[in-house]
Length: 130
Ligand code: FES
Image 1 (spheres, rainbow, N blue to C red):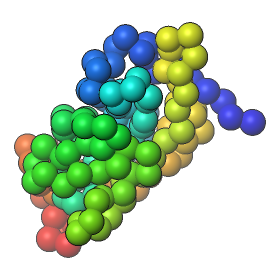
Image 2: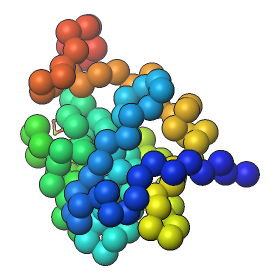
Image 3: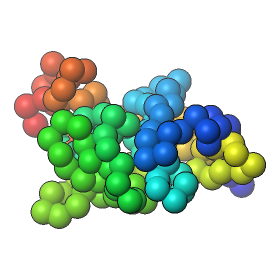
Image 4: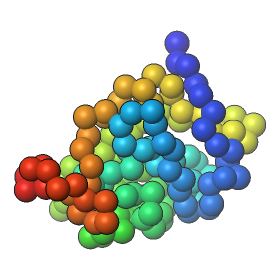
C-alpha cells in the first residue's frame, strides 16, 4: 500500500512551473504543474548533464532543460528524440488541493544519482568526464 506524504499545495506550484522538494537523502525532486493542472514529479536532474529541470520552461506535458535545451517528457522522464536518456519519475497525486508524493519512493528512488556535471552546481568528481 502506498504511503502518501504531503509536499505542498497545488497553489504553491505556479501554472507551467515547478517547485523543488528536498529529500533527506539524494537529489531533490521537481514537482511540475502542467497547463491543464496535472502534476508530475521528476528527479531534479536532466538526463544530459544534470541540469535543474525545476528551472526549465514547461510547455504542454514537457519541460525544456535550462542548460542546453533538451526536452524531457513530464509523464515518463524521457528525453525527446534525437536526444536519449531518462530521468527517474515519482508517483504523485493531488487531493483537495494538496500535492502528495509516495513516501517510499522519496526515501529510496535514485539515491545514487550524482550531482550535475554542468551548470553552477556542477561537481568536480570523475563523473563529470563520463
Ligand atoms: S540539456 Fe540538460 S544538462 Fe544539458
